[in-house]
Length: 142
Image (cartoon, rainbow, N blue to C red):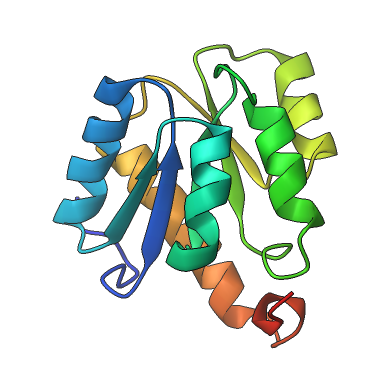
C-alpha cells in the first residue's frame, strides 16, 4: 500500500526494549524512506533525543528502568520537544492504558504487534499535523 505522505524527510525514533520490535519498525520505516533512530529504553532515548531531534517518537510502555509513561512525560515537559508527537506502543489494549498515555501527553496508542501499514499511517498522520502546525514551541532550543 502506498502512503499518501512523503515520509523520506522524517526522522522517527523507536524506543522499545524488544530488539524484534525495534528491528521490525526500523525495516518498515526505512523502506518508507524515514531516518530511524533506535533506543532500548527511556534513559537511552533521553540521551539520544537531543542529538537526533526526531519528528515522531514511538515509545513502548513496559520497559526496564524508565517506563514509557515516564519517558513520554519527560519528553513532553521539555519546551524543545513538547510538540513532538509521541505514539505509545503496547501489547495491552485496555482503556486504562490508553487514558494513562493521554494523561502524560501521547497523541496516539498503537497496539503491538503493529503492521507496516498501521505504523506508516501513524507516522504520516502525525508528521502532517506537525507540518501544518504554526511555528512555535517546537522550534525553541531549551
